[in-house]
Structure formats: C-alpha cells, structure tokens
Length: 316
Image (cartoon, rainbow, N blue to C red; front, side, top):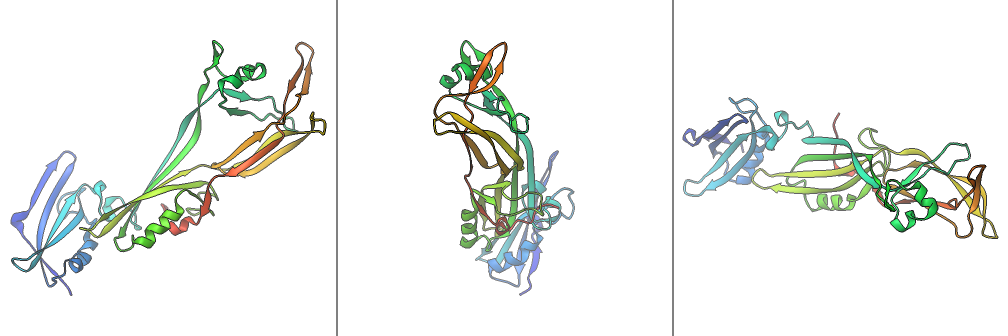
C-alpha cells in the first residue's frame, strides 16, 4: 500500500559547523500500519542529498509506532556523507561498495645474507634471513652476518612490498543471513583460486583475512567490512643444489627452480649432513669450504576459494 508522509515542522533540529551540517526531520506516516513495510518503502531514500544543505545526505531512517494516535513516526537523519547511508553522494558506487587500496611497505629485521651460491648460469642468488645468534657466530656465518657489534649480530631493517584492501558494502538486512555468514566463514584465510577483480590479481595473489558485519535494524541495512592482503607472484626462484653422494660428500650440482611463486607460499632449504665440499680456490686465502643445500621445499599454507562467492563487484 502506498504511504503518505506528513512532516512535523516543529520537530526539525539541526546544527551547522565548519565540518558540515546535520538535521533531523520527523514525519507521520499515513496509509500503512506495519513499521517494517513503512521502512521497506522509505529506505530507498537513504543516501539522497539534503534538499537545502550541500554535502549533506540522508544517512538513516528510524521508524516507530505511536500507539496513542495509531500512527507511525519516521525520523530522517541527515549528515556527513562519510558517516554511512546508501549510494550517490555518499561516496559509494552503484554496487553500494567503498574500496580502499593500501600500497606501502613493511619492515623486517635481517641479520644474515648468503650471496655465495651461484646458479648454473653464473648469476648469483642472494638469500636473506634471520638466524639465531649462536649460528651467526660460527666462522663462515659470521663473515656473512649483518651489523656485528661486540660479537653480536645486530642486523638491519629492510622493507618488502605490502598491499592491503579493505571494502565496505551495504546489503539489505535479509541478504546477510546465516547462509551469507557461513559463506564468509568458509572463505576466511583462503587465497583466490582464480584471477580476481577483472584480472587485476592472478591466482593466489590475494589472501582474504576475514570480515565483520554490523546489523542496523532501524534502517534494515547490514554493513559488511572485508579485509584482504595482496602481493604479486615471482616468476622464477632458482637455487643451486648439491646432492650428497653415497659417501656423504656433496656431489654433483643441479639447479632447483620454482615458477609462479605466490606471495603467500614459503620456500625453505635443507642442508645435508657430512663434510663440506670445496667451492673455489683463492690464491690469497686458500680453499673455501661450504655446504650447498641439498633440497628445496615449497609450501602453501592456505587453501583456495572462489572469491566471486564473496559478492563483491570491485572498482572500475
């Protein structure tokens, strides 16, 4: 049934400041006695511009029955566009989504660098890590430690690329039901199984950290926040491996290669037991002995899921 709104002008309250304007308007509703149906018809106005004030939109609508007069009262709350509401001037796109991309760097401390492992092509593969102090104080490791002061490796802070995505999306409160929440539970801590956001990210380049849901029963809107981390794949990682022989001495070399390494995959090396093998002979320093890694491993700690099931459309 169509409804009519009769404004109670004496109820208007508002404020104005340097940061913007706010106003509340109260209406009596005619033609419908069910508050839920009234709100269902009125909620299409959320996000619309204030009829007078600039940079001010309708952020929420609250309805309540007035038993004494058998009417329904609706309160329109106008304010800052960044504080909520629907589409249009609220900063949301036509899909009721707001996306934020953070592209920066995170620091990590390293105290060891190994740059004396040549590949078969003659180039050098540099590996950096953090090792316990007792390992770094060994003769060979100590020469490759970073920032050794008074026998203790201090290390240095380095930066690695870091990307994060946060999304806020508004749903009809009925859409964010138990099945919707279950879908989010299953997708938490998974990687994208296929290209996502129109190919902007390749397979396994985005990790879905989780979400939060805020149910506003007054406006019948569910606000859902999504959190992601992202990075780009590395095409090739090559490490020179030296297999142990039957006698336990490091044997022939071979090159271990991993292609398309996800930023959320981990690679580690296993060194063989036994005597070290000569690497090269230097007339000044003599023969340098080292132990090449025998095996390299690759591990994906996260399962994959179809990110299209999250219901996000994405920015253009």
